[in-house]
Length: 410
Image 1: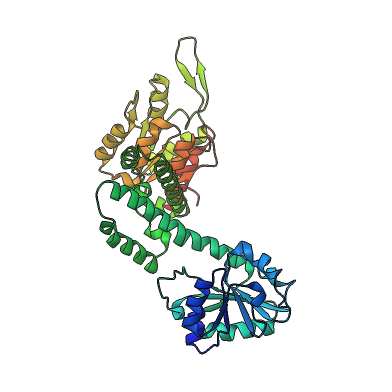
Image 2 (image 1 turned 90 degrees about the vertical axis):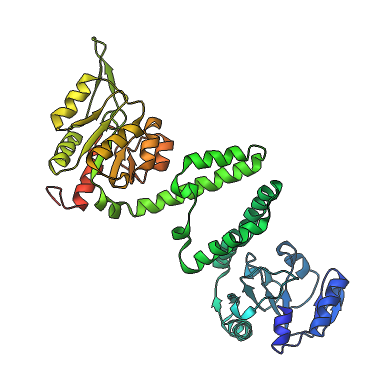
């Protein structure tokens, strides 16, 4: 900032640093005096810029007397009120950029955020800031703090990922240079589209097989395993939320339904004296199933159970594709999809527990009851407000048919 202000014609009177050598280097560039002594800081300047570590600013202020001077800090996370007991004139000029001594920056392209303790002082700060940058915005301390948090994610945490990548690749005798075109392409994407639309990778695709392989590869780096798992979980969560937002829009393309039984249609099991397990089912679910079939939607029941009464119930409703004693629900789903020549993307599958996981992972609309297990809830793009046996099947069928204008009452 000193270099930029100096080039714009501002006179830099003095540079202070804890280290005299550092103060001298910069002072020579901007033709200024320098000191490493707080007691020797000049009182002749109009403005005093504080570019100290955040935690040391107030301690520094207690050691100098600049009561009527214009004090300015450039921190993203320090409140403007830090100056209120030390001067009558103060403000903030916060450039949103990462700075390194080794690299020059073009201040004209850097967003600068300003704040001051009075309208008059804000006007003064703006006249300085607009000479530095084309992009100047007034912003409160609270919002600036949030911006700074976002900046840490964007810059510091991203670089941490680069370090993790370099550890992995260089340990295997490969060059980090291989990754640089990918880094440039990824950065360029967010210049043209929202990050939520640019997200790719195994977690975004819910490719659990690849994720497991990657985690196994990191067996000797438990910290990287944790980082990989945490990031993958967050990506998956974000993708699921995005899909839930678009849930109703995606219902337009649904052409078929597949349902588990226990934990979906029923949540209660009774043992009959004959040894057969009896289930209670919601009549509203039954109506929805029968009506959807009448409207031309293929319907599959895929269950690990073997109860004749269950099969009889669904055949009475008009279901012809009933897979009992299912040990591979994904294989049964493939059979069902192939029979009607319907791609997985156009199938809604409702399950509640781990046996449904693989099948739900491939369909376009994985959904579940309110009381499904966490793993199933995590991969569902819609979670019904109804629990198993309490109308969750009716809920999803009705939503699909209403969106497609096929429900009896819109």
